[in-house]
Amino acid sequence: MEIFISSKFDRRYKKLPNEIKLKAEEKEKILKLNPFDPRLKTHKLHGKDKNHWAYSVDQNYRIKFLFAENNTILYLDIGRHNEVY
Image 1 (cartoon, rainbow, N blue to C red):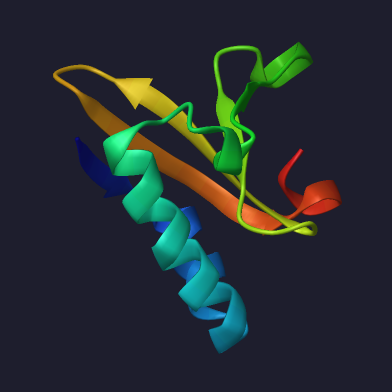
Image 2: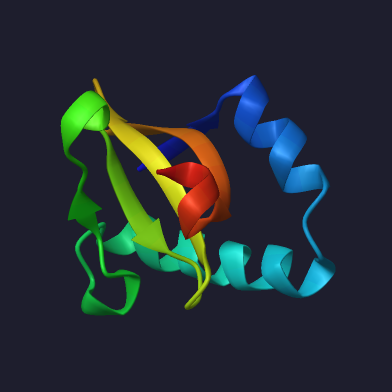
């Protein structure tokens, strides 16, 4: 599974604390093996984001993404729950 990142995701990721970046990297490894691993708490979003998915980095931070073509994922955003949704 290949992961691409949006410019918004990149900007917001760079501003995160190092502790959250490390957790995100560990969760990404899990995502590449199985996007629906229970440790990720992957879920489909609703409303205006009904075509998007998200998974938990920790209790506070989430990554919003899209399943794209050819076994790829596009990271759209990262942040606290109220920032991403």
